Length: 429
Image (cartoon, rainbow, N blue to C red; front, side, top):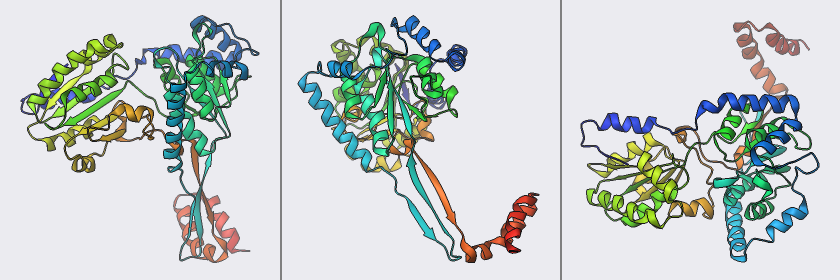
């Protein structure tokens, strides 16, 4: 874990190195992923079946790759009542938040009598990737599928690896609560390719969302353009800005809540209190042994964690904007002034009683957020990701007369004579 201070002569260089280390997935998998995509494109479902057998130890064919309704129902029946109620509450809150996001159509008429506007329409079919293993999170099913459902997507298709044939009961329930139509037991880059190209019985999708490992992230990156994607996501991040009013044990727990995700996740504290900084470092060590995920969290904290001391708390705002963290907690006596100064963050959590995990599960805003400093230019997943804005224009005779000469003049200036002709031929009518 790094300790930095803005009082250090070498601070600028050390902080720049911290910002530039985005810990993105290893791009060494690029060639392997490209080969998988080529196989699926050329061989179709046969390649998907062979790769699934090799990596997930599951034998599938065109008749068994889809999880049938009876299997889904049997898996959902295994979910304990308390978990079912919690997942239902989460789905209700996430849906309510995203309904308020749905964009509105619009139109206006200008002084020339020209009518113009825009309308929003959803994609026809969206594919949802749900990881197996460490990241088989039902909360991610809700966060990815519910915005698509609210947007009005006609069909939601989910793919999820089932190592040794095991289904995740909570993931099946989350799919049911969020309107997933079909589920296929495939994963990895081959599943992304199947969704992008369409490999019967797996239908071709217009949009693919959902987290995954380096192979999945690279497959999405390579297929962007063939299909829409949510984002290329990297390891989790949290930045906490805290003053002396904050409790060090709470801060330590919040830092570890992201460190436990991945050995290359990053947890950073910025504070103007050396006493708080020392106490947080001590509390991290006290809390680590209480975690089932201790090994992962410790590797993350020791390899990528940081505590930054600032001479005065106002220095934290430009530092936070440079870090552009996925999650930003403002554990301050008065977070409002700092909130106004933050321009770059995936999601912001205000006050000491707003720990990031509430946002992960049940707060309402989406937890699919930009990582790797990408919050400088992008935001989290929302309803708009599953919709397209189509503009429209109605000129009419009066508007045409007002705009025709200038249009033809500009077309001539660009050497596009057919453009000019398309206007002038109407003048001759």
